[in-house]
Length: 262
Length: 238
Image 1 (cartoon, rainbow over the protein chains, first blue to last red):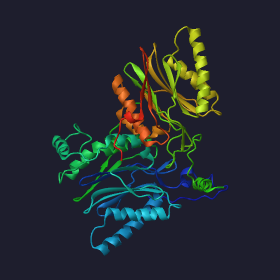
Image 2: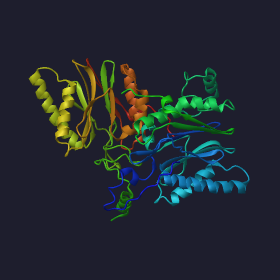
Image 3: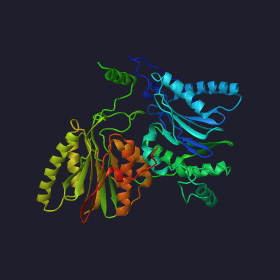
Image 4: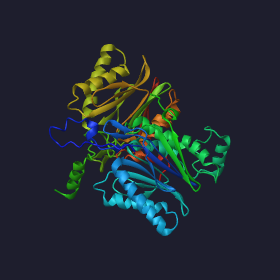
């Protein structure tokens, strides 16, 4: 992450000397999203970090690894979310060594929630925790501002998320059949059942799934949000987390689906 | 000062603006949408327009003062408008606009153009922009340009668009309408599109609700379609 040193101007004559973006806090006004499927989760985020009207980093990575198969998507104040995820990464690493096995996603989510709730007055952080563990498979937990914790099959967050609630509600369907998914992968194309293939079949390429899911839900949803929200933009970063590991992808701006009717 | 007020003041101090219906906010992580509790939209299709809204009027987001109000106001035979913002301001403006438009129509001895209706609203909104808090979506059919949709924003900007959405519930369906709109839809497709959009917005916005009022305006006339709450399409409800 680019380190931006903010010159904090006290109220007074010096205040107007510094430009607006130097006085603003660094924010990941953003769009983040996570979807569960049978073998794991897919997470995605845009890549814009702003200080006021200035884009401090246009290629931010908002998908932060907390553990080998647990990631978090960060939104809100960049400083707050970085500090929280550093702390949770440390705590989770320690916990995992004590247990001598990979930690549960629920544990990670609870650690986030503990911190976000305890310090809710000082913090401004909306986090989606997603990952895979042996006990419950792919899981998505959302910890919005305030420190609530809830598990959802699909979750969106950040400033851009409000624009895509309708789209996600209408396009997401749980428990796609394995046949639909196989048909989709066999045809190898975007054609049929764009809504299918949220369910991944056994070990059929994680990469096919990313490709499939790119067209299914995340890419269109994220690019719709990026088109409407001024604080979201740049590239789309995706990650698929499953039993077999983590695969990361970047979809550049010119490869994103475009929806400009007007 | 009671607890609720203290808490609200604390939030304000920390920078979280209260969601007051009459205020404009900068686009803030917590505050989505500007102004009134409603969802309104208007969409052009092949041969006509559909203008639609929900039917909830609420006070402060916690009390529903009416479950069945009709926010679609007929300002001329084939021209409707729906309101975003203060109900009082909107009623005053539309009353004035109706009068001016009917007078204009008599003078011209022909039905007014949709653009004329939108311009009348725009003039009223712009010249009184300091005092008013109302924006409009105007849609209708006229002989010169066929079906049209205009949006008059709160400050008095006039814009012609193939479709437009407004109100607090509209933020949740920007993605959906961007993805699903196609030009030159058929009447049935458009009706489905508008109903779906309203249903999705009602599903996410707590100050939008009730029934979906839709008005289909074509050369042949005007048709009201009311979709009661339980008949609205259901989407994946977690």
